[in-house]
Length: 550
Ligand SMILES: Cc1cc2nc3c(=O)[nH]c(=O)nc-3n(C[C@H](O)[C@H](O)[C@H](O)COP(=O)(O)OP(=O)(O)OC[C@H]3O[C@@H](n4cnc5c(N)ncnc54)[C@H](O)[C@@H]3O)c2cc1C
Image 1 (cartoon, rainbow, N blue to C red):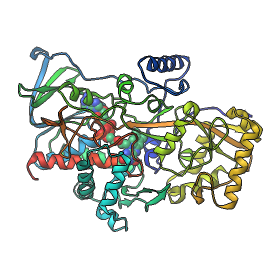
Image 2: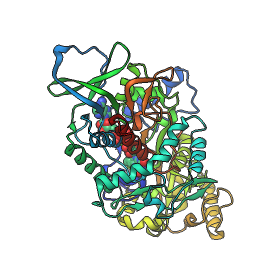
Image 3: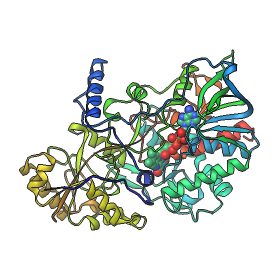
Image 4: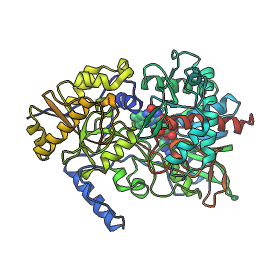
């Protein structure tokens, strides 16, 4: 058995959903080594003592690295303020949510200040979700809105604000056309429609998204163009200047906020209010412990490059009386998070998998979030993704038409680098730590299903049934690849933040991953691209509403 060295992150432009963006940016490995093990041990035992029941210790997995929270709860006095600004709309966060709103508001004449904590904008995705834009209807991907509402209800287990979903379904096509027609203007080439719908385990997995050429690179470029559009409309965009606190008047309305530059505090008054667009909070361990189920917050790969996402907007909202989604918050997680923190396209696709008992455990052709959940449900929160000497052919077959966007040699090389290479099934069993006879039975059963063209036990789709029969064999130990938390402040369909009685807090808005009220339990990957789609759609609508054009 050869222990292949573990190194490197995926690089290069790849076009597959979350993977592609991760490939460009690299995922952060979890804190590793003995200190992380100790930390994780402390973590799980404190959970038990805090009163949460957990099925087992997940000491092999870890929390995300810790980012720096910018939210401040202490009073800021006028003597500490180095600059004062007046504007119509103040936005915290220059990700897809904040930039979309800034573009729409400034296009319609509002004077916008946009503060960003990091050194650059955040735009990490491939698929932009939308319904019935002309890019989809012309490709025969028109969808009946009622079908989507059914899917949303079931995905959220009826724990969502349906008005938000309805607005998303009705307006996302229009918002997408606005983005392309007003800002992109064909400069990124022809818009690429998503794939046709698939039915898996009875679930409708929709292809209701668009992409630009280059996959993740195309999406980032689209938002670079949104940034340029904002600047050309006079948006005052400042990097490395986090929002730290909201300003609330004596009636409870939000009338502005404080930012913090290298020189000191900036006091900004905003006549139309403040939009929180500060993203998720996985880099804030305290919030993760309070909001996310123990098993969901442990992973190996942390894929959001914006380590500035520490829940600042959540905390600012809570400080002024906002409501927030109930515990436990939903998270967006894919499979394919290798133990060294990398995130692999080959493994993201449905290659054969076994748990540490050497047994198969689910249909591997399901949407990524469900496969990740199933992997994390296994003992130890992990599994082993298996490949053999036909890896290049298998990867190409599983990628299907998307193969054109991948460098298969590179993808396979990276996979090999995070795997253990074995010449025999006995060695493979040893690498996994399971009983050899059990693993042999599992592989025999899989190969028989491949030959028969039907997986009677787990219903794996026929085109994914590829035999494991050619040494050398590879085992990549895998857990979740964490993309973002998607629970947040309670909002309505106008992006107004609601207080704990369900009433809007005047002047306060939230959009993107800082906002809640849409998902429950797990991010619904089968409703493709809704994460990016909601950022664009609600930003577009909010800008227009505040400018009075609707
Ligand atoms: C690798 C990867 C691939 C993905 N692929 C897809 C996909 O294909 N389709 C899809 O729908 N979704 C995808 N997602 C999810 C999607 O990218 C996010 O959900 C979406 O970008 C969220 O946008 P946002 O604006 O809410 O947050 P973010 O993009 O996280 O932006 C928030 C911004 O706010 C800034 N900020 C934080 N705190 C402050 C503060 N105090 N003051 C000022 N600024 C602050 C941050 O620095 C950041 O720039 C992917 C996610 C990842 C990580």
